[in-house]
Length: 130
Length: 130
Image (cartoon, rainbow over all chains, first blue to last red; front, side, top):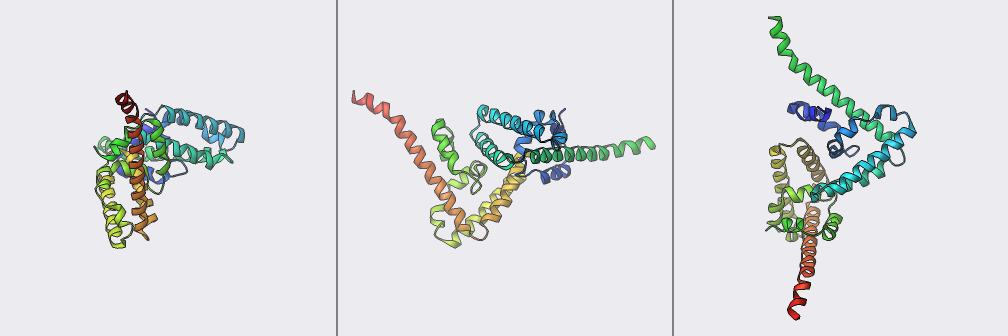
C-alpha cells in the first residue's frame, strides 16, 4: 500500500496533523494526483544536489502537465492548471526548495503513520502482558 | 438547471473563458460546493449595501463551515478548510468586496452561456433561412 493510502486511513486526530503541513508550498492535490510517482523519487538526496533537483522538478512539471491534459473534470482540471503555474513560478529559480519541501512532507507523513501504528499496538501489547 | 450545471456542459473553448475569472478571490470549489445557494442570493444589490453584504458574508461562511464538517473526503475537506480561512481573512474587513466578486462571476458566466447559446443557434437559423 502506498504511503499516501496509509495516510488516508488514519484517524481524524492524525489527519489533522497532516492538514497542517500541506499548503501552497506543496498543495495536497499534487500529493494525491502524483502519489506513487512522488514516493518513488529520491527527494532527500535531491535537496543537496542541484542538477538532480532540476531534473526532478522538470519531471514533476511533465507529470503534472500530463494529468492536467487527461483530467476530464472541469473543476479538477482548473485546479491542476492553477497549481502547475504556481509551482512553476515558485520553484523555477530554485528547484532544490521543492525537493526539500516534498522530502519534509514525506518524512512527516512517515512519522505520523509510525505514531498512529504505535497507538494501535498499545492495547495489543497490554493484552499480551495479561 | 442551475447556471453552474449549464457552465459545466459548455465546450472547452467556453470553459477556458470561465477558468480565467476564478482565482483565489473566489475559488472554483466554492462555486461548485455552494452552487444553488450562491445563485439564490442577490449579490448585485449587496455590492452597494454594507449591511446586506455583511449578512451574506456571514451566511456564506456558515454554509461553507457546514460543508467542511460534512465532507468525508480528506483532500476535499482539507481544501475547504483552507479556503474558509482565506475567504474569512480576505473579506472580513469589507464583505461588499466578496459580493462584488461573486456578482461579477455570475454575470460573466451568464455572458458566456449566452455566447455559447448564440453559437449553437447559428446553424439552425441558417437552415431555417434555406
